[in-house]
Image (cartoon, rainbow over all chains, first blue to last red; front, side, top):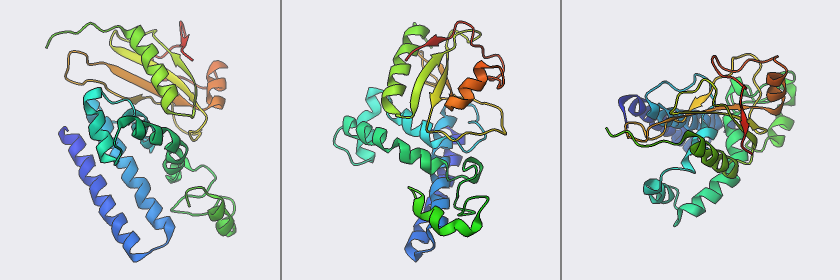
Length: 142
Length: 108
């Protein structure tokens, strides 16, 4: 891990610590999801700094990160499987592939990527704040 | 560092297969060799699960592979929606600077 990766990794851990506090206190799901989205984005930023160049500035990253984890070199595969509590890497890969639609939903929680849909900062469609309840119920990740 | 032999076209085919196998959102992968360096693989991946953005320039993600090793190379992936892909082909939306569809190869 290079120094740039270390910075993003530590910030991801810090965000995760806040998420744990929010979950423990049972605060509204939108706030927990806000931190969950930030944790995943910063994990991805940490990963993509491996090239030595700054990752793209947008909030996109978690889905490519989850894709990259599925084709790590053979020497790293068992370590990845262990982290995710799978006995074999193939089990992790199958899980990750099936999780990709949810991964994209999670990535889309960033307000800049939610377009006119709800997001954790403004948990309602842009054109209809009063629609909050329905939007929440319809959202796969909410 | 010893310079390991790197077969860019073979690696591109392998990556394309891997990406399609690991992400159900990817409908098609196009390999864009024109203007890329010998150790750079450029993909446009048409992805139906990504969020469409209309207010920012298209920018690839650098998967930077084997950094610091003899097999080091760049894998640059530009994810676009089907609609964005249509607009790229109609020259209504620009690829990143220096990227070109000339000699693009459809890898599935």
